[in-house]
Amino acid sequence: MTQNLADTPRPLSAVATPAGEPSRWWRDAVIYQVYPRSFADANGDGMGDLPGVRSRLPYLRDLGVDAVWLSPFYASPQADAGYDVADYRAVDPMFGTLLDADALIRDAHELGLRIIVDLVPNHSSDQHEWFQRALREGPGSPLRERYHFRAGKGESGELPPNDWESIFGGPAWTRSTDPDGTPGDWYLHLFAPEQPDFNWDSPAVADEFRSILRFWLDMGVDGFRVDVAHGLVKAPGLPDLGSHDQLKLLGNDVMPFFDQDGVHEIYRAWRRILDEYPGERIAVAEAWTPTVERTANYVRPDELHQAFNFQYLGTAWDAAELRAVIDSSLAAMRPVDAPATWVLSNHDVTRHATRFANPPGGTQIRERGDRELGLRRARAATLLMLALPGSAYLYQGEELGLPDVTDLPDEVRQDPSFFRASGQDGFRDGCRVPIPWSGEAAPYGFGPVEGGPSWLPQPAEWAGLSVEAQTGDPTSTLELYRSALAIRRADPALGAGGELTWLPAPEGVLAFRRDSFLCLVNTTAEAVVFATEGRLLLSSTGQVEPGLLAPDSTSWWAV
Ligand code: NOJ
Image (cartoon, rainbow, N blue to C red):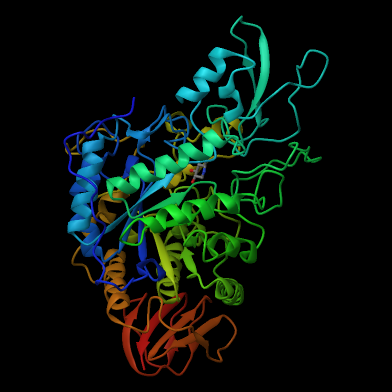
């Protein structure tokens, strides 16, 4: 299945860095997540694709981001929107070809953008050649060593081997059928049954992933986002959990299949490979750990470069809570000399414009809430995030102030956890609706033809939120992001810069300085009297009355 690029000259070089001087570019990079299914559809089939992404790269350059992280576009039956990979070295035809990926990487580099691709090492698709052979060859097949096959419990093996539950609902085990048609061993899948977990004790698995890394590094990618980075190693013997509370993808509990110390050896080996390549290639861990201190283990100097800060993503719009998580994040990263990262939205959580439109309630919200309030807070939260020391992640569409689509009809939903949890969970489709680019009618420039398809329906009010509608409007969220990113890029006090110094502030207000830069945040519903000083650089509310912080606002000042 693997495609061939025989005629393409390689390797591509990554974005040039000044000779001899590593830029350590990732330490303050703003990295924009593209969810390829929903970004731009060049061929009009209703599904986003790589040529679509490629055509919109100038938009991303002009927005002012440093790098683009692409969610999976590999050959996949799409049981979990591409996080079920059947061939790690092939592009799924619905997204294009390897030549399209190659062209995308080249164009991005020409525009000064770096490309980070998703790597899914915890599990493959059940359609992966190894898993199919393991099933076909039956018990005793050496291919079975590469996954977790176990005999069932009970008289005839009719019960799962342990009590683990899938993060998407239901048991984490599915019984296989032997080649003679009789029920056979069970296999482990922390996610959907179509996503069997690899056994990382198998040297063949480790070898294969080192080779996959090299394949994409040779293609010229600048780094990897490592899916479920905390899940690869399972506790020896796969011990029972002893509890039947349904697990959440976004949970922080200590589990025999999460955050086991053995994962770190894998990342040390990967770091050695990344360091062999010119141009400072990086990796960022998707690691849900109980504490920011445990997260810091993934970014020790000989491991990965960054880890997502999910503690920050999960924090309510509350000054005291925000300050606490900012302080603990910076403190946790200091001993390992890794940059802190900040993120408010991604393809697995309710968009922050909708989270903040509702009372605090975690990262999965199903209510529409108060849209105006949500957007006001989201704009303020973004300016706070972009003022913090370190690197920041943006999720496509947040620069348009998009809310989650909370009223998708059940029949269009595709999130596998929605079906496994009988419609009680699994609402991630709401943040995955294709984004609006232009025009008055769906698909709003997502696809080439007005009235053409989009794999999830877009709400009618999105015409007013399109890139076209917002461009040039100084009050728009898009122009706020453009201004913020331009200031962040130009001001040496921002980005990685120095640490921050908190200033005394009344309850509900955050005030901090970074050299000559001042950030003021009011998380309350009331205007707060506060001595503003210096020159206003940007405000989430547009105008600012001197000496007064508007409700739910952030302002940036040069002092
Ligand atoms: C985390 C990804 O972000 C999510 O979308 C996916 O469902 C799981 N990992 C399983 O790969």
